[in-house]
Image (cartoon, rainbow, N blue to C red):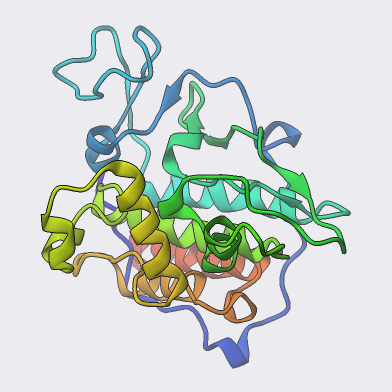
Length: 263
């Protein structure tokens, strides 16, 4: 299902209205024992139920036996994920998911996206936090510094989840694993390289500010703008999740108005 939205950009950062109160989360919690998950092939067109086969099985309509295609747009799924993050980041103390990526987003029977895999989640604190988590492509630069330089104790906040959300938006848009086209950008990746060396090099490029996920020309400008803000190198320049929620609601209202002939 293409991610189609009108070309409505969120308001400038200097004119963002006060964040709305947190929305009521689905089932009072963003996580649930769902039976469907996203994969590269299903995520680019439609969402395919994996009820009758292992999650590791390639997910295409032709290969799925007994699967149910759920007519859920990428935009709707993005809103569900952001709603789950609103729930986590509204806790006291704030809960950081720390492993946000499409593989950790499941769909329930009615196509509602649920955020899962809280095995590395933790509360924020004033103490220095370490970085023993996640998958390199989705990790924020400030967290990767702790991964690369084990001698450093790096403090980071829920803004690390915001960066990962930007990577997830890129993954939704391109239907590709982040940085899968590096051989077209950096000649060094055209040479044989083991997976550990490749991940280390990607981490170094991200920490240096020389690499971040890309989006396609077909991605709506409003979504590009939101993703770009989320992917800011400086965590202080990234929006709070309530701001992202507010922007998505503005886009949603514009979509409804357009469908009703209001714009």
